[in-house]
Amino acid sequence: MTMPAPDQKTLREAIAAAAQGRYVLCNVRLNKAVTGAGAIETAGAEFFFADLTVEHGRILATTPTDAPEALHADDMARIDCRGRIALPTFIDCHTHLDKGHILPRTPKADGTFAGALAATRADRTACWSADDVARRMDFALRSAYHYGTSAIRTHLDSQPPQDAISWPVFRDMREQWRGQIELQAACLFPIDFARDEAFLKGMAKRVNEAGGILGAVAYPAPDLDELLDRMFAAATKYGLDLDFHADETADPSADGLRRIAEAALRARFAGKVLVGHCCSLAMQDSATIDETLDKVAAAGLSVVSLPTCNLYLQDRHHDGTTPKWRGVTLLHEMKRRGIAVALGSDNTRDPFHSYGDLDMLDTYRLGTRVLHLDHPIGDWPRAVSATPAAIMGLDGKGVIAEGQAADFILFDGRSWSEVLSRSEANRIVVRHGAPIATSLPSYAELDEAFG
Image (cartoon, rainbow, N blue to C red):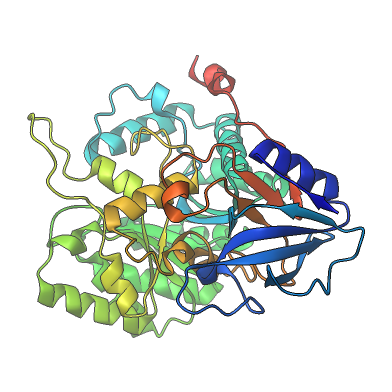
């Protein structure tokens, strides 16, 4: 039987009714860049029409829409999607769940990096109890889940005594959200803390016990190379991956990305290394850029750009003048060298970025416009799905593939222009074959934290 779906509400209801058995989403548009092995081969087209067969929460088959219905039993629900786009659930590899939504408590934040540091430090010292961190973290995760994100890596401010508060909260939250959002955490502290061998050893042990990632802010320091060597040595000893913040500035002399690549090469590091921001690279001369990116490629580093936060903070002035650059890094140049590149949400409603709601469609939309990830769009959708999944070591996530969990988002739009022109607030998030039934949490839930 064919079950027509004239609108998103009817379509959602039809999928929900069929989710307990085998059903087929007919006439769905799949994107070749994020559709896995076994998919239909297409020549040149970014999208292809397919029938998506789902059974017991897994993708059974992707077949051409006009193919014989070999897998279609007579009593199977066949739901006409009328050309709507289906994409895999989002993977967000750079967030700050511990900072999220503190903005109402930081009225002195002024949109500058220095102001954000000072305001966040003051709020962390005064307010970041276990209950406070858990409340805000859960609020953020409910938002991300509603929008269709299935995996998140968060950085956790780990300067003592905050590490003893936030890491246990994170571990509890990871258990609570298991099966809905896969959570990872990376410690975050100023790189000069690595001068203290006892601190670095203790932090590496804490991260290892929590199954986390070792990370730091690699800002310019006179002994940066030595500090990075210590980080790589600790990561090697405890079997940890690394995740750095670097070069979040317009100063062309900031060269943390190059230094991290050189340290990885010196260490012959076998783990994964992700570097976020890398803004200053766009302000450097061509020879310096080429030298840096050659080393990044040789070292096998990955890079995540954070367009929302970088646009918000970088080149901000309080003298009545307009910012003159975008603040983002050189993703096109990196991608051409085979460097894995991703987009991430970064900060949400805190002094580093006053807005956002962990909606990766919003991040991808902004990234497309700011970084010109279009004409053609090509395989850039992988930057919010398959690529961060690989960076995070999440096999099978970030693609629509036969045999994998039926985790995908069905949009109202039928083209990139349609999907990226509206908020797609009525998108249908399908997890394990069934539409989720959630609503966004009310900001009023946080009022007690700001009273």
